[in-house]
Structures are given as C-alpha cells and as structure tokens.
Length: 141
Image (tube, rainbow, N blue to C red; front, side, top):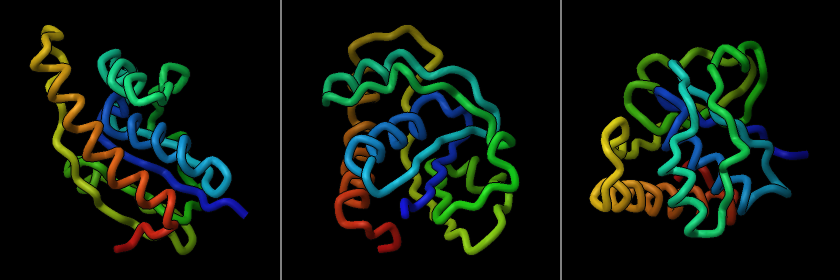
C-alpha cells in the first residue's frame, strides 16, 4: 500500500511543486503525492524550467488550495516553508507532520540569470532531501 504524502507551502507555486515532482519521480511505486498551498496561485514558469533541467517535468501540475484535501488521511504532511508550518491545518488519523524549510526563490520579479540561479539552488536543496527520502523511505531523520 502506497504511503500518502501532502507537501504544503504558501503559494503552491515553487517549492512544494518541485518537491512533489521529485517525490513522484523517485517514489512513484511507493508514494501517492500531492502538494497544496495556503494561498495557491500558479505553477511558476522558472520552477518548471529548472526542474526540466534535471529531467523532471512538472508542467502538468497545478496549484491547489489545501482545502481540497480537508478531511483526507495522509501518512505525512510536510511543510516546506515557515508560513505554511504556522497555518497548517490538522489532518485526521495518525498523520506525521514534518517541517523541512527551504528558502523562497525570488519570484514575481524579472527573470534574470541571477533569479534562475536562485531557483536552481533551491531546487538542488529540495532535490537532495526529497530524493533521499524517496529512495530510503525515511522521512523522519
């Protein structure tokens, strides 16, 4: 039986979307993964670009409100930003809540090479953490 995992951040546009894509990529056989935000927007184009650079396509993902998952049972709810940690709703069952904070890349400004590099750095941090969890099955370390 697949473990159910929900990844939360503020806008569900960058960090949680990248984490969802990575966990799906490396753990599709073991995990049912979704992501959501407290105030969702759209999947960031630069996040899509930098994920494509490592062979993971998140262009088909959509930004979702955490309320879409109200009342559902999850094995893990992982917040990837401090804002989401503070406003994370309670989920039923024996859900394990984890907080893995990652810096917010500079979105909402002109996309320059500096901005793309900032997205790459965040992507690499998220990639390392979520790939290891997917491959080892260890989320609580």
